[in-house]
Length: 514
Image (cartoon, rainbow, N blue to C red; front, side, top):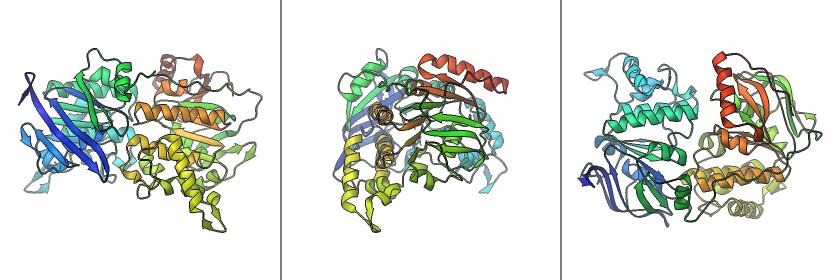
């Protein structure tokens, strides 16, 4: 099959898909060419991931046809799609935690003689590592890896299957800028081999840098498909939203005076998770960033502040009162909220619906004499759905099937529900679209305006510097300095962090401003 003189790898004709009464794809007509990187973009719920799952055999179309290299995918399963040369890297990573990195990469492809396993796959792994240069230890258990490293394993697993069509759903959501650039070089190599990369992402800079063509989706329909040449970040956003929109950050309220006592304070905190002598403060109405490279200890600080990791030394104080042997249950009772980086495994209960996901930490607030006030629960849930613009809007929606952005909004609602005093946000906008990202950013400003103390962690330095009053710089589990966020550039921060990491020694801290 040929499209405009180029071989067509995948063709969708009149594809429709519904879940119950909700139609998520409507008359989708698309062609993906061999040897191209084709981006699928749109707001959460636009249908782009669903298109990928239909091509990958995870969903079956209600109507329409799917052809892969000219062969109809008429009995769709992931196994059948793989037989036709399709591999999918999911946003929700699907590794076996008890197996090693190499075992996950070659799962189902193990070297064998007459069905008996033949030794280690480490030598085969080395060849793929030479191509990808991800720096993964093939002997390490997948369950011990960071989210970023688990994503790298998924990418290597697709390459190991020699797939001609690779669907990448948010492949850079957990990667640093340097790691994303390295992945894009791998993608360029795959394209040069004639492979098709279907690139589902919210990172518009990555679309402009790495893709040949782009399809914009909105409300389950294709808005337009065309060459990336001539597109800008602004034109892509306008296509996704259906209207003109500025790509900008909301304005924070004024920074609290230094004379105001801290709302939350860590003094000399160290944990078994690898943080050492952490000293930080956050005042009421202040947004403070934690900045560092992957592995610097940012998430470990968040876990210690929430009581998820026990402090071996030091103290945590809330409004001047020390919190002894802090646990997550005590933290919630004291008004400390934590939005973790892995919403599906650590933030939400995916077997529960929207209403209990929001209300579970706050049952004592909506109960009388030990009985749940279901009317109050419904009222609060409806208010949160309206406030955050969660879709679907039903109070008993199945959260497991929500888009990533709407799952994140449910998680934010879960903590806004209880009127917190301190909010810890770890990668709050990871894997969400431009519209959901803007709503999350507005929420951070709302928190500061209402006097909440906010600790913000993000791998996107531009995000944390634009949304915080000041930031602590971290390396190797230690705070190495403090900066006024509006007064320092992303380049200056990266230069300092990379220098510290390269020297493998603690930098001289900047004068404290907290």
